[in-house]
Image (cartoon, rainbow over all chains, first blue to last red; front, side, top):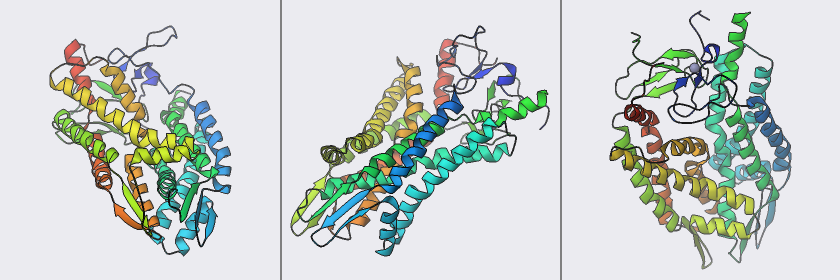
Length: 211
Length: 210
Ligand SMILES: [Zn+2]
């Protein structure tokens, strides 16, 4: 790290999260507001780690019913089956819908697992004041923000199928309890990522320099 | 060359202080430490974003009026638009799912399009509209929750799944949703809130550099 690298926080400055104006908060500890756009100024997202953990733990808990309960039941005159997320993907694969099976596998299984692991890793590393590969960890955070939303795919598919097929006398599709749990997991992990402040990844580098 | 007349900004992902540089049209500046995009210089950003937003409004109305697609099995036909589908799932006692879908595919995109048009129309007539600060703040916070592009992929996945057991009749809204997806992406790519803040600076005559 070269000596010229200074953060806004080190100089007691605050960058507005809405309009990006850098200004000095009013001393005295009360809430300060951006002089240009009026947003409340925070040097770091308030209670970032605590809030991020809270949403993440809730997501971990709901991840269990999301994967073990029934996501979707489909029935017709000749057959009836109930699928979890995983068995649904397997069924798509064995019935020959390979492309769809891969898309649903990525959106419903791979992304949620990787997202839970990634946010856990980010939070633990920040709490331990780690100085390990900050650039890579920032990239990981960006990736989580970018792809996390795509897990909502299955919720839209279940909605469309359940809505369209329910009126047919010969066939029925019903969303199971796992759909609600899975929707909650997606929302909770998104909230967890939104409350995480990537600047915390870089702060230990500056603390170390001062010592 | 660093120009001392240009303002100092802090990276939003690593908090590094750095002096702005002048950009050519179409370029963007990245953080020298973590590589995140700091700001962009987009040509005719306001006009382009307004044009895309107006087109998106028309597409949004079409996409929510006409059926997405219909299915047919032994003479039974069923076709629905998005709001009817949400209503149907609501009636099947999946109220949370229905709400989630309604918010992410109808309410938030509608809010984004209306606010964008209101904001840019006012700026076109050279004034900051009342509540502009609040609107920009809200647009920023609802952005991750608008999911038209993911819904579009969901429509395609459902189509393939249903084609196994049913005859599919594509509706007008399937094309409208496709175009809406493209237009919303175009709005996001051309909108540069920085231009609006520069306008605010100019109007209030406040000094930028600190
Ligand atoms: Zn940076």
